[in-house]
Image 1 (cartoon, helix red, strand yellow):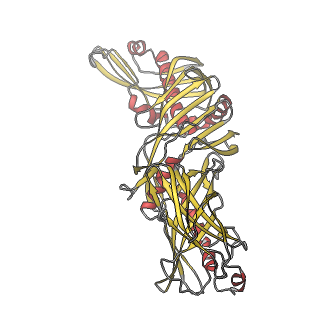
Image 2: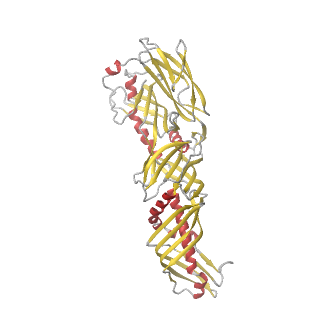
Image 3: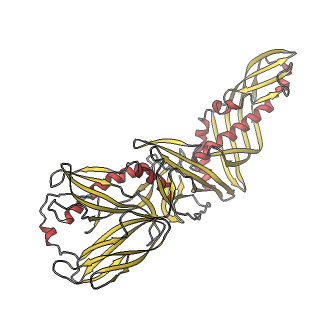
Amino acid sequence: MRNLLFTTGLVLAVGACTEGAAALKDPPVLRVTSPTRSMVQSGTGQITVTGVVTPNADGDLVEKVLVNDVQATVDAEGNFSAIISVVPGATLIQTVARDAKGGEARDVRAVQAGELRAAGSNIDNAMAVAISADSFSKIAAAGGPIVKGMDFGAMLAPLNPMVRKGDEAGPDCLYGHLSILDVNMSDFDFTLIPVDGGLELRAEIQGLDVPGHAAYAVACADGSNDIRVLADRVVVGGTLLVSPKDSGGFETTLVSPNVEINGLDIQASGLPGDILNLLNIESSIEGVLAKGAEMAMAPMLNSAMGALAGPKTLPILGKNLTVEVSPSEITFDVTGGLVVMNGSMLMEGAESAKFVYTDNGRPDLDFSQGFQLGLADDLINEMLAEAHAVGMLNLTVPQHGGPFDNVAIAMTLPPMISADPTDGKLRVILGDMAATFMNHGEAVAKASINAKMDVKIVPTETGSGISVQLGEPEIFVNVLDDIENTTRLPNDVIEAAVPAGIASQINAMSGLLRAVPMPAIAGLQMINLSVGSDQGYVMVEGAFR
């Protein structure tokens, strides 16, 4: 039973000559009896690992047994026990027996510890995004073309008529309604400067063109006319307040707006003078433009800070995944802005699944430099547990030649992101996968697979966003005696047949992880990315370019 490190260039040749394997010295005989494989327990603390170790066929003396580097107590009959600590999340328990001649046997198994929660449960503080003042200036610089291309007609339509005069008791003999059909412009630029409590907005519009329609009554005679408002240049300023929206995402309110219009041209021929005076179109259009600027900022911030406007259903590997991320806390000061968001994920068919939840702290974010993202491991673990529940990560790997024709790999535990107790880094743990070696439909051997790999954050293909990916796995394989090994192959050759199939599972998990919502803004690239961990969060730092 050997520790195998998977490398990209691994070449599997199960039918090759086994003289090298036979020449290796036999290790001690190791059997772990407790804990059982794939154990899930409520809560954390200490756990006792027990088993039996005996010398190899040559009788080489067993010198010691280590369990996660804790030396076990071994009696004269080879019975051993060791007490180790189990942290929240997934823990790999590595038991190593060594003899006087250097022989070594290893057993690796997994245990998951924490609170079981239902699939789709809300994760408080699932994500936190901090953006510096300098980054807000870059977001604004890149956002001008995006705002210019927005469909303002559709955005403003629910508010029409945007101007209502003289109809306090309902339309009567003298009233005027002004509806805005669209807002067009030749260019749009804006700046966002963080201040205490909000963002100072200054938006400049070039070549304004606003088509509209007026409905009215004069002396009890109804009428209607199309109008058009043109302007060479418009500047809209004010303080933008940002708050959570009930259905998810942000809503924005422009406080104390100030609008300056140069080169105003109101085209309203045929509109009675009384209605022109009543509607006061010049003043009214200022309010319309302030409202349009206010509404345009919400989708910009939804994108830049990683929130989603309500639930989103995404097709992932043949299943629908419903993702919901909504802001719960928003803070601004002169150095930047901080948004904390709750989130949940629910996969089609996994409604009855459970996942192991571990308490999170609160990540320490500094929003004075670039951007920082804290992503709670529980949000990802919820999704991975649901993928496990629907069998998405089980697979069969064909083998050509040799004493078996395929290897069926089944997940007995969901993959889980956990903090490594040795260095605090967050890693994905694949615990106690069952690999059954088949030959023409008959099981001929069985092994248990445990693996761990680093969590990586990389730019998307466009460079305007980031996504979660997985690093190279470290794989541990143990041939089991559940099924008699009738292949006549040594254990180490059977073990070597396993890693080739793990790559497929990693690809499947990477596809799932790409569904996790992340900050992204068109026109900006994310650079200088670094990954760490803090209080149960994957921590990402970077900058916009």
